[in-house]
Picture 1 (cartoon, one colour):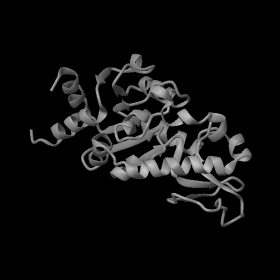
Picture 2 (picture 1 turned 90 degrees about the vertical axis):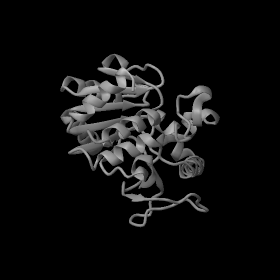
Picture 3 (picture 1 turned 90 degrees about the horizontal axis):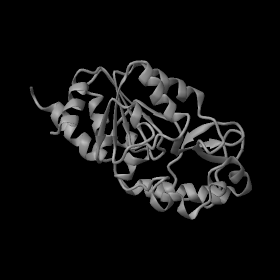
Length: 247
């Protein structure tokens, strides 16, 4: 185990309130393309204005739904990796382990994590465009577009699109978790998406130890107390193995 990994293990062992702040990189290791990857990632064949804005949904709801149903199918085909599984397992070891994620794929929940704040929504929920009611939605196809059972409004993916505000309840809970944290692992995020990136900077001011895990340095590396370069699945596999070994 290298020096940085040993340092991370030392911080982990003495922490009581641990947060995983995750971005697209952690899911990329499970096979989900990133938004900002080479070639444009999953979005390379689409313009954002066509599939990821409220205006796009008003103009062509079928195109938007087809796009997100394809994303659901892709997410259905992959599995959580060792990094996802580590935080789920640690809920049984530490007083509190929470996940604050920018991802919408549901892999943290699939891995078994229960304390999750999804900043940008979820592929596996739909929301009424009229009354705002949200429901679980596991459908992979729609012959006809779904409508709300309460008010009849057209349902939309429960995703925070460009130009929309994050859910205030989600923000408040995520911020509360991060302000209380002893240790925050910042995993696979570019650190350029706001306001999410500001959550990490704010947590630093509250005294959290920040350990960044990424294959390359990011816009948040300067905030980190420790930088762990490499694949998150490999790094957290090593940490999980070490934390469960008898001392």
